[in-house]
Amino acid sequence: MAGLSDASARRLMASYGAAYTVSEMVSAKALCYGDKKTAALLRGGGGGAPFGIQLFGSEPEIMAQGAVLALKYRPDFIDINMGCPAPKITGGGAGSALMRDPALCGRLVEAVAKAVDLPVTVKMRKGWDDSAVTCVETARRCEAAGAAAIALHGRTREQMYTPPIDPGCIAAVKAAVSVPVIGNGDVTSAAEALALLEQTGCDAVMIGRGALGSPWLFAEVKAALAGEPLPPRPGLRQRMAVMCRQLYSMCEEKGEEAAMRQARTQAPYYMKGLRGAAQLRRAACGLTVYRDAEALARLALELNGG
Image 1: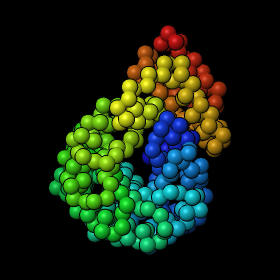
Image 2 (image 1 turned 120 degrees about the vertical axis):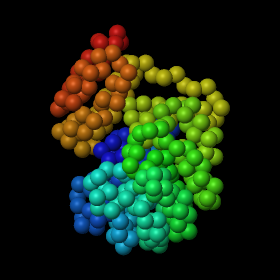
Image 3 (image 1 turned 120 degrees about the horizontal axis):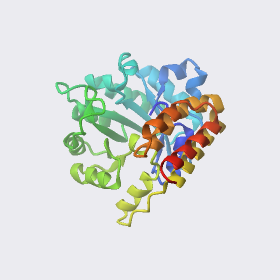
Image 4 (image 1 turned 30 degrees about the vertical axis):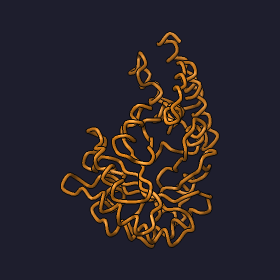
């Protein structure tokens, strides 16, 4: 997730039991051009969990070259983004725009799989819109081209992030291919993860935005999958401590100024459901130095009797 799944977030999620982590999506073309900001997104690995580098693009040769360059950062697998709905990505024919051309999706996978001696996975959507639901055909083509696993977000690009996902399309892809299928979308609790597995028969569940501000979700899902009692959710004081830990790690990774700009997006997730949420969000949007993050944590505790 661009701007969200940086090295600090990956370490945090891995510490709570994420089975693997994936980099922010990076442009294969920018890697080929030697863009330093793009390369910086790949540093830091998976935080102790297996680590995938996610590339986006629409040209097989460029994607292959980008994958080779990404090997420098020692990923365990290469993931191809066929799901991002952002206009700046789809406008160039990448991300979920690829769902309009299943044959091209297959060529992209084939080019990358031939270029690197690593598993190649795919993250896709249900389709472009309701008139172009192509996930089954695309999954079959990707499997035939060498994809080792397929993650599917159960919405079209047109739907963005609403309404609720369609578990039927995930079940259809699972029935159509023999490689592992990973269900994605709307998982914000252990119960929802178990329901997605039951409804679709998928092999695993991918958690994205649902873990932002709630990294302990991975520990809860892991316990539920093992049939164990869910660990108690952290109290507010611990929740704020985890936020500060993540933001401090970001400062160490990329410098205080850059980290605090990004923290304006990260910190509000920790404020969900709290009293004074509007005031807390405003404070989060004004983060400039790390001391502001500590002040935000104190304000949250004051407003919520912590």
